[in-house]
Image (cartoon, rainbow, N blue to C red; front, side, top):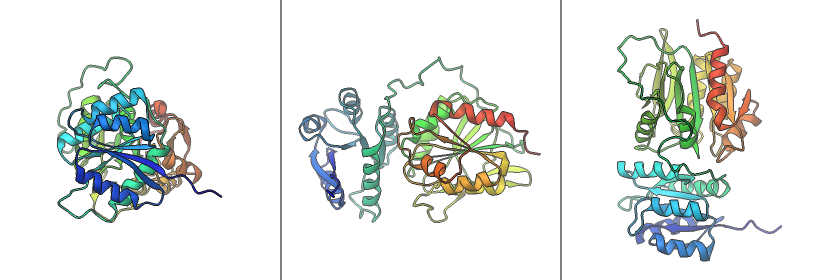
Amino acid sequence: MSAQPKIRVLIVDDSRMIRDVLTDILNEQGDIEVVGAAADAYEARDMVRDLKPDVITLDVEMPKMSGLEFLDKLMRARPMPVLMISSFTERGSEVTFRALELGAVDFVTKPKLTEQTPDDYGRMIAEKIRAAKSARLKTPRRSPEPAGEPPAAPVVKRPVPRGVKTSERLIAVGASTGGTEAIREFLVGMPVDCPGIAIVQHMPENFTRMFAERLDGLCQITVKEAEHNDPILPGHAYIAPGGKHLWVKRDEGQLLAKLSTEPPMNLHRPSVDFLFLSAAKFLGADAIGVIMTGMGRDGAQGMLEMKKAGAWNIAQDEASSVIFGMPREAIELGAVNEVAPLARLRERALARVARKEPAR
């Protein structure tokens, strides 16, 4: 039997040191080969044509032509899997989310040259490149506003007074690769009287706050990065902060968001399983689970426990998933009640909310 051909990667970064570091890291992987390294978008354009890489890693900020501009041109002319290499800065994270809207599959943070590269960095970037190679490319969202009907007038999001009644039901959502755009589509159009929503999206520290802020500006509901002991309110969505697990608990009748620095679960912190297991334990049939696009199996076991406890679980279908790994694992484990395309996940979750009497 012939060996699988290696995944051919083109690195695009204006820093020679970053190009060298990434080349060394990736060439250590038995199934990945760096076929070229470009210092700017113009070099990259020629290398894409000549070398025909399977995956491109692309710096967010570059001279001559920005990473965003190059990505936009590339996805129009020759759509292919792109993994963004992003800095930790606020500017870097803002541009990264725009890159995901333009069709980039995923991103990793740029290695810090002043520090030793963490042992798991090579494994992480290699996994993301493997996922990108098999990803289903989505149509880029070129407008900063969601497509479809014009958005409703902004809802005034007033601070909630202390002691307010928390949500009786919970929609628990988990996603990974491709999830930033999937979660955006799920939340935009969510009505202000919806149950509280807890979300785990695999994402590093410093990016989750910006992600929540971007969603908050697009949605009628309030979206925020979760804080420890946040009351989970109707019409609010809580994003797990990077580097911390998000879980939920009923405490004296109040539904609260909790954060934990317990070790990673399924190699992730935050972990979807961590959230889903807490929903199974403390909410049972008062929870609805939604598992979206993503690589790996995080969330499958927790979703099974939710189903055993009486929750209703929905998985994104293969055709609308960038990576069908996480939904497939949950489906194959028997943890899912129904499968729906991304465009119908919100409708199906709300239909289930409407069908069941609220918690006593």
